[in-house]
Length: 231
Image (tube, rainbow, N blue to C red; front, side, top):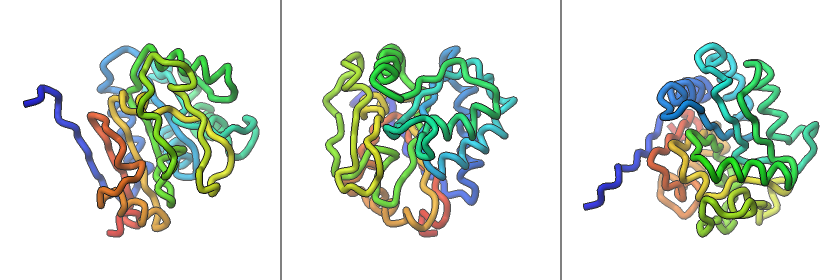
């Protein structure tokens, strides 16, 4: 019998995903094992709502000077572009809570290398990913080969990968954390919001070969609203 701890895959179907997300991040901060709290965030409309609620709920409940913030993924665009995840995170969260201890952007090869160096030295506490209508998890697209062979401590190109949507639906080339980096995280929180992702959510629940079923973390928490869950 294996001595490895059992993996926890939790599904919470809630009416207020953003509010539940904020509560989970506050809880994770207070349960962190070290002094710092390493958090990776994503982009998009659902993420914007989640981070706005986190700013309100966590402004005084989280010591933001103990937070090291990474990007789970980023579009290869200028900071001022509407699709910039860093810009969204700063507007919805950091500008409202003051600042984090450290922020690792993914703007270019230099920042990619800095983020990879930091990730090689530590495991993330929480990674936030969002389910898309096509089954993507943030910028991990269906049909794209996952970087399962990269090892932590490897090169920046293996820890923070470049990717594009193989179907050409999503705009922009992307930077995103490689699967081994995500799988080292203490917890992955996946949000699924709206009837538009109901089919993708059903594919995950059915155990199909989609990105949502590639997560092998010790703890994976799915936060879905009733529309996404088909309830």
